[in-house]
Image (cartoon, rainbow over the protein chains, first blue to last red):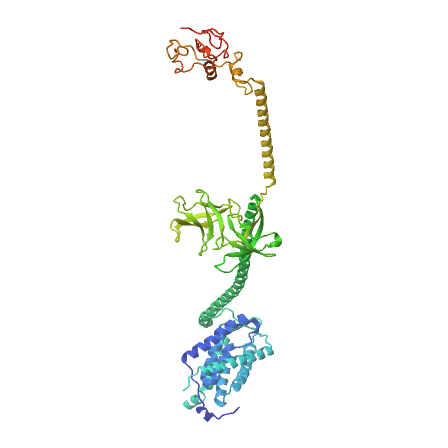
Length: 173
Length: 428
């Protein structure tokens, strides 16, 4: 992993995608996240909105965009659940911001780095979620750390497939 | 100031968004009476609006995915069903094929059974001894119309035995081997059979022509021979017994080689091209069934009784003839014949006496003309009178009774007015 200086970020390529892709891919992630658990049951160890948030945050290298996308994805995810709206929003807002910030500073073109970042950011999201839920809101939440670990692994597996596919859809100048 | 926001705008945006969400969470979470935090399950208007937007955004694709899933499941199930249906269809098709084969086999067996039954019936009814045989092969040549039987010399077949079916004659045994025999079909050009037309009783020789048709050759042109007439075997060829059906006249054509002759094309009664089972006439001695033998015995017995009765009748009539007197006895001279005997209880009737005698009246003729008149006496009597010794002519009898009743040479004792019957007659 090569750490780059802040001045070098201008030299980094900012990925651009078709505008429709910014709508369809998050929407597809939300829909699949709502639909696949019905099919897979308790083995739905993944968080597709998080994976998409990480991907676009790393690719765009814009913390603001990553923050907004993470917030939007998290809020929609909360809206579709029985949770209070904002729990996932806070977690994914932070993840989007961190991913974009890291993407500015390190070379995320490497696929392995992106997978590792995705794994770590998934754990971060779970941690923020649990923190927000139990500490900030004071609500009872039963959680198991290996479940969050499996979710992080599942996100990495999805990222392993999804990232190359989305890379093909970017606009190349 | 501007540079601060510019420099830390990312963090400012992050903080703002986080703060907004935290505030939103704070709005949603309540503390109950026990001091524990709970989520108000009855959403506020703003929260509900957010959930509504999210649902409106996600629900259509979800519905589409669900519909696609159900369609896919339906298609998959249909595919599975179709696979099963296809397998079932293949199994059923195999079953149908097998059943068709079995049906064809059974049908062939049934047809063969019918043919054999008909042949057996014919064999039982037929008067001559026959041997059923199966046609097992042919010559394979159009020019050689022969086929082979599954019976041979070991079964009693001999050359020139007639081969027939219940429909009609087929051919004759040409060559005999130990277990097979070669049959020359009647439509072969080298074949021949004596036939007779049923109606016109025209005889001819049946043979085959180059086209495999049956034709009767050597017949003089005869307008009476019409298509449809039945052709039977004549029995003169020492192969086919008489009276077997040969076929029917199909058409009559003029003999191309001889103008005054015709060729009669015959449609064979037997299916010469589809021969399976045939009968070989092994013995031309009449063979009677027990019923027929009983009928014959009965007939003979009846004939014997009738003959005995006729014989008895003849015998009785001879006895009667001996007992009854005859009119002419060959052992007696003419003048002593019973006919001249007046004692005959059944005298010969005389013509009545004429009411108006004339010269034609018997006995009324003059001398010299008597000879020209019809003689009133019988031949022998007249001859007797004319041949009287001394030339003396006897006086003719005055009446008709002269010629009957009295013997020659004896005077008539019966009065003239009396008839032979002795009854008084009117005398004119």
